[in-house]
Length: 178
Image (cartoon, rainbow, N blue to C red; front, side, top):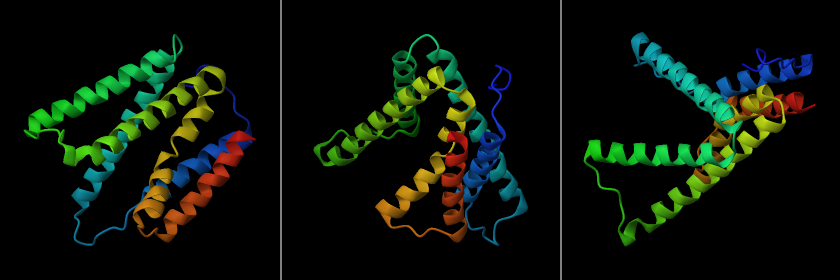
């Protein structure tokens, strides 16, 4: 899309984008289980490709909608996500936890939604003022932050390839922003 609109990134930006792609793959890898069949592995690959396509469309639609305003696309996305979450609760016959005991998770959900909305506003602003391709590459690095937060907040162990992926993500960021 960015290239079709006339963006012509330099060789360092292209190298940075490729480095970031490798970083996302490495950070997202999981240890394989010998008990999983080849069909299960291909099914997982299919789900991964489908979700990547949906994320790409989401950010493309954000860019298109953001051309006429910044806040309304983010508000619509937040409302749609909330409606989908409540719809999933209805389908699963699960009542949302509105009790006093559930206050902690509700606060975390509200903070998470606010941070997500702020990040989406920043993305829309970046696509309006800068190069769309670079904004997409930087946005695609979110799995690295997820792994890093899992390590820092939950104390999860990082695999060696995930560490290499985080280092590549940093290098790729430097290359695309030069």
